[in-house]
Length: 99
Image (cartoon, rainbow, N blue to C red; front, side, top):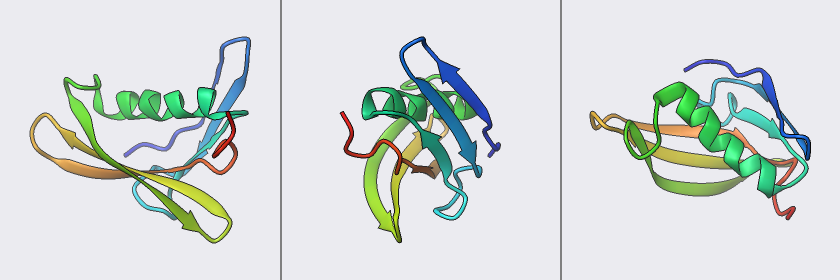
């Protein structure tokens, strides 16, 4: 899995993405956004960059919220079209519960 360091700016909010490669809680991809409206779509964008087209090359099979110390982590379970399963971790502390 790749490390992600980029930003998405749609003239309404800036989404900053950094941290690890998403392979574990300790290596979670950190998404900094002002609200869930901007942060949540960034998760799918990152997964699409890593694995291809959603619902064609991969699909989400589950999501879990984890509280790790003061961090809010979302574990996203995906399965690729070839049957390979992955758990991908995002640190969503900055926008968790903000609408």
